[in-house]
Image 1 (cartoon, helix red, strand yellow):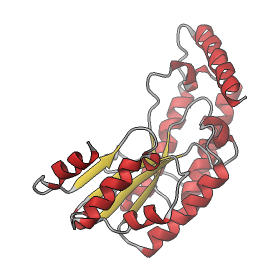
Image 2 (cartoon, helix red, strand yellow):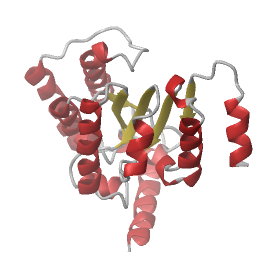
Image 3 (cartoon, one colour):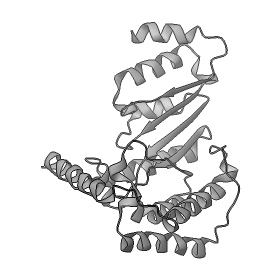
Image 4 (cartoon, one colour):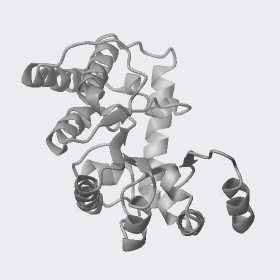
Length: 239
């Protein structure tokens, strides 16, 4: 099937973009088979390659792929550069992720075809660390995007108690003062490096607005009870 897929896409006139989704792309053998085949056929030089990764993988084969396509646009899923990331995105070892991010940054500095961004999905487990993620993004000069949590009502920020909401809000307000963030219009072109600062600012203000106007669900206590069940289940998996 993989070989047939390679043949099919190789015959698409004007093919210029391929995006891999689902699971951990860089664990999938088919990803390397497809990409290497496109390189061998001389097609990669005209193709933009996109994917999302949890940042746990960096190999010489991957480096070969990243440097042989016309351009690379990929995101690293991470919630915080702190040890809490390993709990939230279990069992992802945060030190390994941070080491690989530095390797990707070194590669980006060497080749101008690589666009790397941090992909964050704030939940009640990570909103207290969003300010740390913003600061990490600034210090490392990496663009950042925020995804909206969907179909996970038990992890919604609205379930947090008032004191934790205020702490998270205070941290984001401190960022505004520290970096002089200003509100701007909604930005759709999140890949534009010239808009990186404005995108960060919008993330900060979007979550300031959310935390400032928290709307509790009608079944708040029921959802909190389900949250406890979820966390207990996760603890069993962690052993």
